[in-house]
Amino acid sequence: MTTSQTRDTLTDPDAQHKIANRLRRARGQLDGVINAIESDAPCRDVVQQLSAVSKALDRAGFLVISTALRECLTDPDGNGAPDAEELEKLFLSLA
Image 1 (tube, one colour):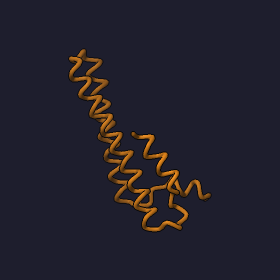
Image 2 (cartoon, one colour):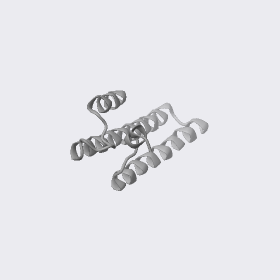
Image 3 (tube, one colour):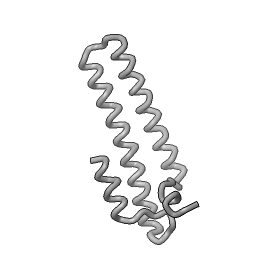
């Protein structure tokens, strides 16, 4: 495994579980948006569901970054530790 592959891996099983749960929630909410559109739901309902999907995805992304940051602080010289520039770019991509 190369260093770049190692950097893309989340090693904390608890964090992996939390991230997967957030993404499952977002998927369910996205299904709700699709159902709302297909059933001619009021615009307000569609927008509220879209907002929920967006928040769930953002939270999953921030959890990925915070996990990487925690791993970096715990083992800054480890192969899986992202450098500061990489973390900054990832964080700003969600802003």
